[in-house]
Structures are given as structure tokens and as C-alpha cells.
Amino acid sequence: MKKGNSESKEGSQASSINQQGRLGDAEFVANLSHELRTPLNAIVGFSQLLNQQLSHLPDQQESVQMIEQAGRHLWELIDQLIDLVKIEGGVSSITMESIDVYQLLKDCIALITIVAKEKKIEIFFTPYSEPIYAKADHLRLRQVILNLLSNAVKYNVEGGEVHVAASMLEGNITISIVDSGIGIEKSQQEKVFQPFQRLGAQFSDIEGTGLGLSICKELIELMQGEIGFTSQEFEGSRFFLKLRPADIEVRDKGKIKRIQTPVPSNNPLIKVNLKLLYIEDNPTNIRFMRLLLQQFTGLELIVANTGKEGLAQARQFRPDIIFLDMRLPDMHGLEVLEKLAEDASHSAKVYAVTADALPGQIEVAMHAGIDGYFTKPIDIKRLQKLLVA
Ligand code: ADP
Image 1: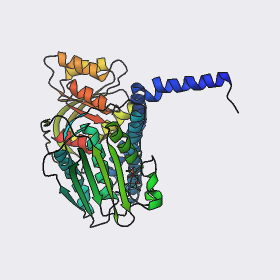
Image 2: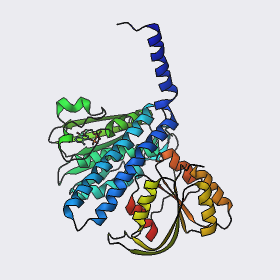
Image 3: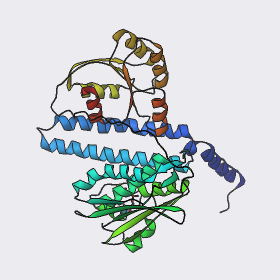
Image 4: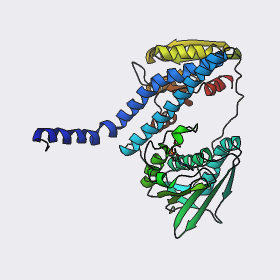
């Protein structure tokens, strides 16, 4: 039936809301991400804690591990869905820069090698005879390469191989990732870049969401590149990227130094000597933190429920570390950070502990001088490491 006037008007209004705001709106995406992560933080957080406490009850421990695993799957799904919504809504911005392809591939391979070793998969890398610089967004290209490498390992066989190569042909840069894995059946190949298509992998124990490659395709197209593949079932696949070369060469971003600190054992009572102020209004998060910190002796914890109270406690209590929620009832975490910096005697390290997990939000906080950023669901091992460092 043909739509009436008023209906089509509403329809066009709805689509204009979509274009102007809602799904295409940065604030909406930020709120969506925050709201989804907050309950997930409780699920993954408490199951991690229970897992550590239930080593004497293997059956219960196994159930808790399954809750944690399901929570983590949901976490990955949320991350990827939010990413897709951001890209499709035009919220995600791409910064085209000059990228040293050799260095980027080397870094990505180093990250994947750990997982590959577990499956006895060997990764070989053939760089091009001369340096290659691509015009692309560094973070996003890294994300795409890691996704392709991770698939080449995930869908491989034990003892298999992955061959990575970069080359320059007719003014185009080609990166190829070839695996000796299970391959993709011919009839399934047209669905590879469609969201939520796992092409049978959903019946295996290989973890995934079916969203990675659809995100990769969107991202590579935003960078004016091309992504494709060829595959032979039971023999393996070759995924490739075609990128534009950069106009200017050499890009030196400086190296990020990573310091290895010992991982605390699962045994309770780790000795530290710390004063910690936690500025947070959500009772579940506070309960979670209290339980987590029970593993430490010599740790003094003070909780403040508002920004104002937090600032007063910081002055009076002189903590070594402040954990700061970013969405406090009376002010934003960044405002607390700014006010703390005005106090000349303040010397605490300040870490955001928040469900605001979008790269832009993290970047703003880092720029504002925060010492570190924990997104929810909190990785408790990372947090424990920080306290024993
Ligand atoms: P997933 O999270 O399921 O890995 P992707 O979007 O990355 O999602 O990939 C979609 C599907 O394509 C996978 O579920 C898998 O069936 C198939 N696939 C992707 N890469 C490979 C590969 N290298 N070899 C075989 N199959 C692959």
C-alpha cells in the first residue's frame, strides 16, 4: 500500500534524525557504549574475582569461568558493534598519515606470534626490497592487519604456516597474508565481509563474532584502499590489502616504552604500602573495588562519591594513587583532574576507571594529563600489576 502523506513525512523525519543525531551522533554512541559496559563490568569483574577465590571448588569455578567467558564474548561483541555503528554513522574519523608498512607489519606480527606459538603455527615475513610508506590511518590499519593475522591463525591448523608479504606494484602497495588453514568453501565466499556471518565457525570452538572482516572492509574503504581474498577449502586463504602510497616519507612517532612488572599470584594478601582514593558514585563498582583490594595488605582505601568530596579527600588524605570515575554526579572526571592539578602539593598518580571506553575519550584524558586509563570491564590483572609496581 502506498504510504499516506503524514506517514512518509514521519518516515523522512525519522531518517533525518538518524542522519543528524541518534546513531550518527558521537554523544549517543558514547552513551550507548557506557551503558552497555557498566553492567558488563559487574559480570566480568565479579566472575574474575570469584574465579580466583574458588580454586578449592572446581565445579563452581568452572561455572564461573563460563560466565566470564560469555561476558568477554559480549564485551568483544559490544566493542565491535560500537565500532561498526561509529563507522557507519560517520562518527569515526580517519586520519591519513604516512605509515612505515614494514615497521607496522613487524609490530603486528610480534603481537600475534604469542597466540600462534600456542597452536605451533609459524609466521614468515617477506619485506619488500625497499622501504614502503602507505597513506592510511595508523591505528585503524593496525586494527585491520591484526584482524587478518588473527584470522590466519584462528582458522589455521596445528603446525600450520602464515606468510606475510608487502610489495609495491604499479604505484599500489599490496599487503598479503596467506595461511595454510581450513580455507573457505566456495558457496560461502560471498558472505565473508557481511556482518555476523561466521560461515560455520559458530559450530566450532573458535571464538569470534563475525564482525571483524565487515569492520575491516569499511575501514579500508574509508582509507581509499581495497580488501579482498582468495581461498581454497582445506588448503588455505590469501587475504590482501591494497593501499595508496604516502606522498611524504619518514614518520617517527617515538617508541612507547613498556615496563614489565611481575604478575601477582592468585594467592591473597599481597603486601603493598599505598594510600588509594577511589572517586566513584556507583555502589556496585565500589563493592567490586573493595573486594578486589582485599587481596592487598598495607593498602588504605578511602572512597568519595562525588567530585567535590574527592577533591577534599585528596587534600586531606594525600593519596599515592587516585582511581577516578569519569561520570560523577556533580562534575566530569576531567574537571576533577584539572582541579587536582591546580593544587601544588598534589602528587598522586591519577587513573581513570570508567566505562567511557571510546578511543577519543581515552585520548582526551591522556592529553589532559591522566596517568593511565582503565576501561570497564576492568582487567583486574592489569590493575593488580599497577598496585604492586
Ligand atoms: P570472526 O569473529 O568470526 O573471526 P570475521 O569477520 O573476522 O569474524 O570473519 C568472518 C568469517 O570468515 C569467520 O567466521 C570465518 O568463518 C571466515 N574466515 C575469516 N578469515 C578466515 C581465514 N583466514 N581462513 C578461513 N576462514 C576465515
